[in-house]
Image (cartoon, rainbow, N blue to C red; front, top):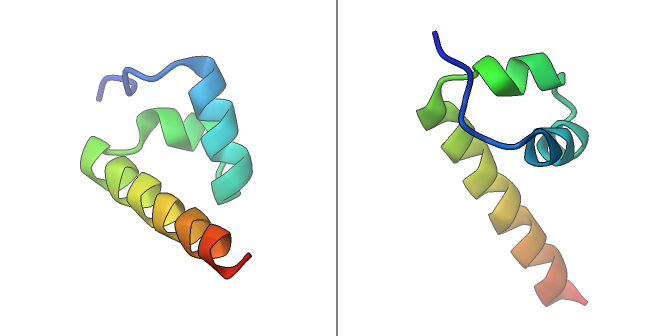
Length: 51
C-alpha cells in the first residue's frame, strides 16, 4: 500500500488531533482517512458554534 499523498505537516496535525501515530495516518486507507478528517471538521464546527 502506498503512503497517503499528504504533507508531513498535515500528518503531524492529524496525528495530534486524532491521537493516532503518524505512521498509521500515512498508511491508513484513504477513505478511512477522509472519514476521520470529516468527523474532526464536524467536531471543530460544533465547538465553534457553542462559543
